[in-house]
Length: 235
Image (cartoon, one colour):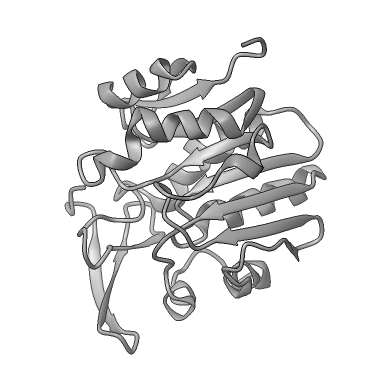
């Protein structure tokens, strides 16, 4: 991603320098120390997350309890926004997320998204694959695992919505393959949706190849497009 909208500061978190960046809407993001990729759009971390994952994803599935699976827990921004929206709308959420290299709790505490205790609570939940009650009406399960080798079999047909928030296809093309999308297809209920910020042609091709109906939507904060992929109600 381009750095043209960002200002940065390095903070020593004990294991070296962590690079924090302020995006165009004033909310913070972090740069991955190995890939060099930002965890969020430089056009606006919160703005992009609300557009792609909350409005196009969470709000698009049926009212009542919603089961959400997130690829890339990252800073916890998508999870916090989801639990906040669930509380606003009186919904319960079963939220599960997979992440191989979690952002350190101390680093997450330096982000400027909110001072609500819930955000800190989300980061206190251990990466043990067990359900933990958080907030007033929801549960969070965190898997510290590799998306490419994780066993999705027990989760078949469990989810209403997937937030596919991996790093960009150019940075990690293996995470956007048809093989991975087939696993995503398998864990969605019929009529469930997968939303992602990327509308790259190879991504849409991989989604269609495994049976998704792909809808191109306006992207966030001036970006041209994003994708919502729907699992047909009748396969």
